[in-house]
Length: 405
View 1 (cartoon, rainbow, N blue to C red):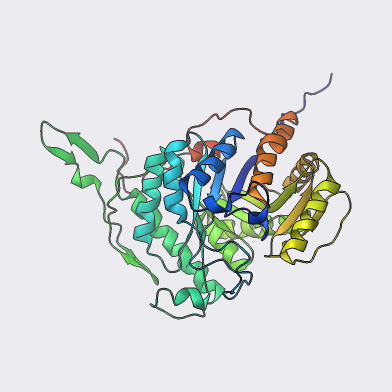
View 2 (view 1 turned 135 degrees about the vertical axis):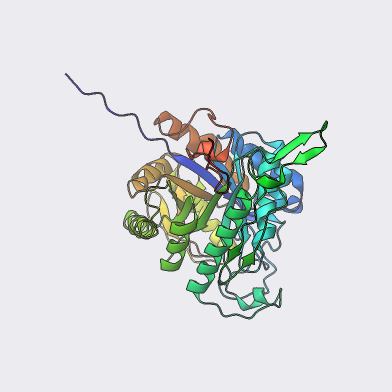
């Protein structure tokens, strides 16, 4: 008698949205809508496309300076997209126009105050009815520090990520500083809030001293989902201590496996080994009907932007010529093969960066998603109303609330 095989483990899938796409020449492609990059309608359309594809969430890119082709300094280039809308405000504008997909803006915490970020993300969670997340970033760049004038670079990688961990801890405590039933709203008695259910957090650390409470009631999710990127020991420690989602470059199986193992070890060292943690592989994608067509399109884009390129056969994988992330060019079927193979490294999902949003976002939602559905590894409908629900994360208890009698 044969033993029935276990059903495939569902794959989590998200897309990272920034400008016209990850590629430097994306804004010059047909359908790119460069005149609309700073309009609400453009971002609403992208969110609607991603939600139609049943994706777990979308991330909104952000930063503290104009984009640059250098990882360490500003540039003076005028042939590439420069400028962004505020990620949190963009997500809040999109929220009422979507129903199920998670909304995860990036926030650079190095020069921002946790009190401000806590209420901004709590507000996003309220207006989206429980679909907010936060992608934590750090910055050690001198030209970004000069925008604020409060301290000078350089900062060590360890200092930046230790400060970010404290930043997240303050944010989380502020989210809990209102108990779930702190609002009474009793018109007859004139009591709107139960003051005993608002709590001072009294955080005292090396980087912050915050009394609280927040001015925003506890978010619908209790704690919106916090994520951070990992590319080294300090960032792994931040994910281990502070995040529910970690993002790692999906360069190859061995590299992803090593990153996953390092983050899990760091998580265990913090005493949080039993707490749920999703690790997503990051990958820039160029999708076409077949591998040669995708490779040819990427080479044409590279040539237009003055970037180096090289052919790697049926589909291409290489480092991003305008950054340091891995790049895939091929068919949706080839990408599905790659994602399922790479998942064996311990990844529970993938954050895909469309090389050209106008072309590659619909290719993800209308070609890759159906391919993954045919293989039985991706949902055919949304089964949760919150981002925590989509990721299988329970709503956490409030740390300040007294246990029920």
